[in-house]
Image (cartoon, rainbow, N blue to C red; front, side, top):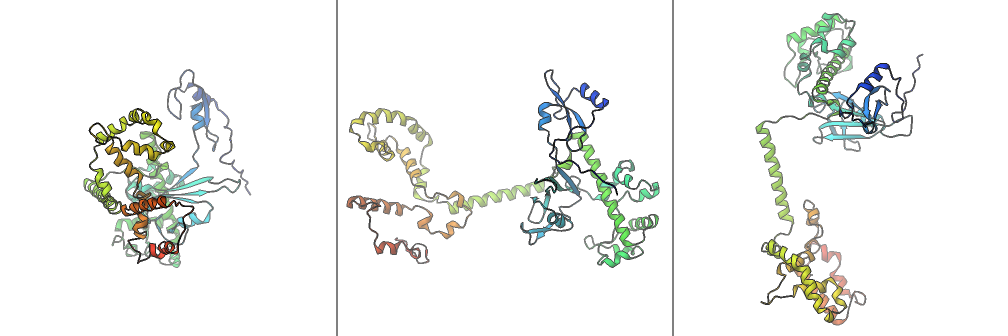
Length: 468
């Protein structure tokens, strides 16, 4: 039998094929880099760029452009309207919680390698990429099969799209049916018809004639095919010597695939020539929206932000007294107080250094001295700064922002959810009592009554007391 050489690994350093005379003339006469399309300057080093997959010479390039040019190991696989049917996902038992229809399920689960999804909804996807690992070398993510939807570039039926192409543009279809007469070839230049709902068992594929026109009925459109389309299907059956309905199915699917290939390849060629980009390596094209649709999207976004604001107002403690006072702060006065603070510290605090003991090094003492300072009219110098410092010193929660949309505030009670004014007062009273009795956290004796008050039932139970 025939033997084939194994291709080199995709990531190996493959040498360029023989450099022909035409390649040399192209290299020496070129004025622009074929990668960045910028001019070669006098001192630029130009190199011969080649494809590491085919070994083919691609063109002259800047040295940096050549080094940064990466071969794509992504192979686009095109389905028409795959988002609507062929790559439609439904709930299942796979690790991601969904299984695709059609052949995609087999592709996703048969070969080693993970799958990346680009979803629109839970059941509808723009694209998905199958990562295929190498079997020859210890290497992951060797090739990527990216399934894209041609309908996201060409939003029309395949029948309509193929009608826009002249026969000389049907390169793929012509190559496959090169031995067919022009009359027979013309029968295949439009999308055929198939009785999908009629085929309800494999035995019907062995039928020796085309079923009647009423068998082509589709419940999706609530109609059957037209007489002209059915007549063309009969003509295809006769001219291509089809023996069974199964053979007709093979011919129908083959022409479908080749027509889609021709449509998309012509679209690629036009995009590359006109805009300089290859749509095969894009997920979709931009689309236009009607004014009504855009307004509907705007209203949904507006309602979303309103919902966020309502939830924030519901869960964040904006109604506390200390936050109400913040509305009375003059930002300009606060900025002025902050600006004069360094000079005040140097001029006033330093003058009193002989009366200051070691406690002056603590932040509490420093701020206490600052906030007690008054001017000649016996008014506090830093009233706004004192309030801001108090707000920052007693945060109402250390994680309120993260819990805006969480159920944690509903589970935890108010004694753990935020520092209440009553709690702060109780802590201050306890501290004063401890200091008066000479107690601290080391020599404090825990009594049974304390343990009773701190048990989980009292703190978190349904009958938890508010006067803890």
